[in-house]
Length: 150
Image 1 (cartoon, rainbow, N blue to C red):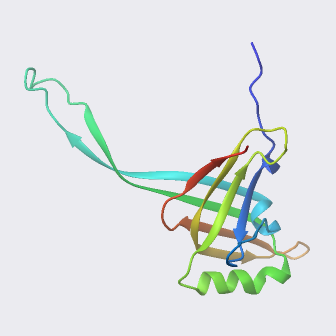
Image 2: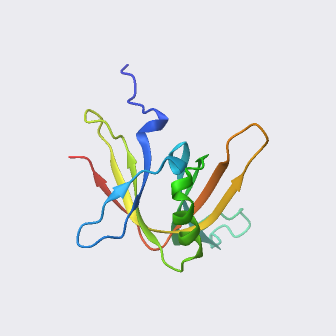
């Protein structure tokens, strides 16, 4: 039996676009990439349709997906140079383009998800004798696409 191909945590990168046109540049800020996650969530309606031939039997629900969204969470040490950028983003009604890269080494197949994200949560905390920690949450603003590495 062959071993599965796995990735280190550093092979999941969250990159944020600079909004430049015509060519947007994406960078992976340290704050997001110390600890990070991407999750997909669907909203559903559950419909119960009885079996007319056996109306006394328990009903297996039918699930209808009505919406899909993605969220990103990230945490790490505050990089002071990025403080105003995150503060402006959380205060802005605008989303930013992001890329979530899975497998960034040349010999690893993978790809990246891309789409617009709103910064919905920005938190800083600090303890005596420690560094300032930050955490952020991003929520998708529209659909995401997936592009496989060539």
